[in-house]
Image 1: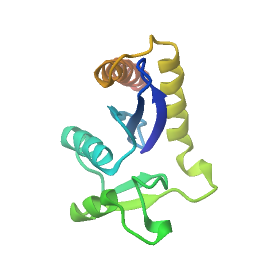
Image 2: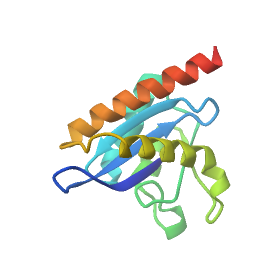
Image 3: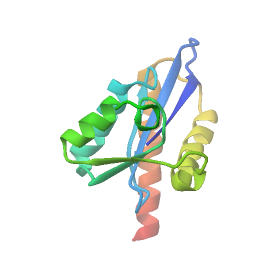
Image 4: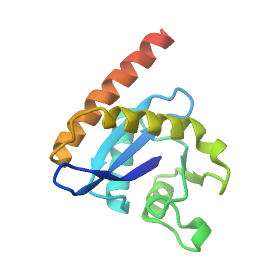
Length: 146
């Protein structure tokens, strides 16, 4: 999972785009708009994806504070919640972008697409754009795989 904060809505508010992808198929499991990168919204995004597609045995994320405290000497809410479900949280290596390279490209693609759209006024408008993108992306990937 990776979050891109600092996306700005038309009224100047910031928004975060939270994305969960399947590492093997690259299927976009969740693409959610949130007011910021925070533990509660990250967990809600993971639950949203897991309730629709099932929960994985392991969950890879980057080292952002909403995802992992392992390298800082504490446990994040995400790590705690994942372990409570029997899911092993793992994080990408520091200064080793190849670990999450597929995810980084997927995020760049979303952001480039968003940059070509009208600036959303609200989080709900941003979510509507993300839903449109996610459906088109997953449909196109399914066609390629069929």
